[in-house]
Image (cartoon, rainbow, N blue to C red; front, side):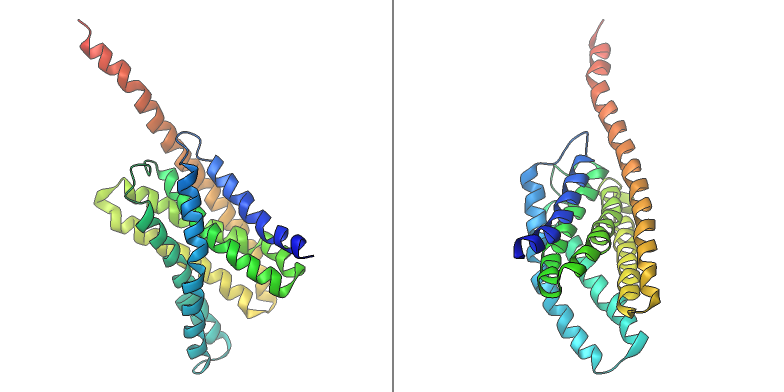
Length: 239
C-alpha cells in the first residue's frame, strides 16, 4: 500500500517535470541543473513549512473565519512558497550562462515548484490517504507547476530586458502569489466555493499554454538568428 501511495504522490510531479523539460526544444537545459533546482525546491519545503506553521499558529489566536483563511492564503502561504521558489531560481541559475532563453525561466521555476510539490505531495498522501492523493493529482500538483510557470515566464523576460528587469520579476512573483492565494483560499474554505478551484486550475492551464507558445516562438527566433549569423559573416567577408 505504501508503494501505491508513493506512486500516486510522485507520478504527477515527475510527469510534469518531464513535460516542461521537453517543451524546451531548441536549447534544452543540462539535466544536472534541472535536478539541482528540483532538489533545492524539495529541501526548501522544510524551512517554508516551519515558517508557515509558526505564522499560522499566531494568526489562529487573533482571527477566525474567512478573514483567517484570507490572511493564511494570501499573506502567509502563497508569498512564502512562491518567494521560496523564486529565490531558488535567482540564487542558483538566474545569472548562469546556461539560462539563455525565456523558456529557461519557465523550466527552472517549474522544476523548483515541482520539487516543492513532490515533498508536499508525499506528506499529504502518506498522512491523509489515497483519496487526497488522487485529488492532488488534478489540482495541487498542476497548480504548483502552473504557479511556477506563470512566474518563470516573467523571470525569463526579465533576464533579457535589463531596462524592465525588476518590473518583470515583480510582475511574475505577484501574479504567482495571487494565483496561489486564490487557489488556497478556495480550497481552505471547505465549502462549495472549493469546487471553483477546478476552474481556476483549468484557466491557469490555458494561460501557461499561451506562455509556453510565446516562449517557444522567442526561442525559435533566437535559433534562427543564431543560425543565420555565420552566413551573414561569410557574405560580408567575401569579395
